[in-house]
Length: 169
Ligand SMILES: [Zn+2]
Picture 1 (cartoon, rainbow, N blue to C red):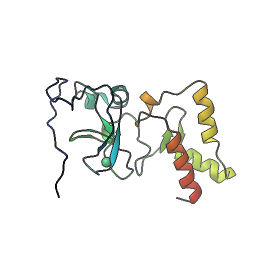
Picture 2: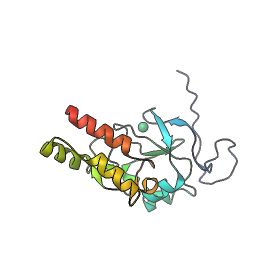
Picture 3: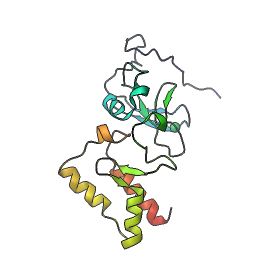
Picture 4: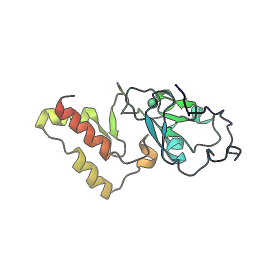
């Protein structure tokens, strides 16, 4: 099998030597394959990476832009840039969407976990997680960019988690 994926050497610098693959582009565009599981991954902002990666892990990089987030539950990759992979060990927070994560946080802004949703479903057959999150997004507002490892809104993940649990997953 031929692969078009070309491994790059981490230069630990923000020089512009790699035209087009410059790690300092403000926001990664499109989707890139995780070097570990080969699922497509979405880019995260440098400030997301900066807020959620441990200091000692961040010390290896001079620039935090150009990382991608692998949301595949069975893949240990959390963030990657070219061949550089960061895992749960490098993170300040537990990545709730990864298999076996405890707590399995789905909404980082308002602290909804799969455990909490499950308890509600077991007690009442329903959960107000989505309503609660939507209301709080209005007021006080959310901060997904610096709280959620995905760097984005959690509503899709929460909806999926509720659906999976109702199915008895
Ligand atoms: Zn992966």
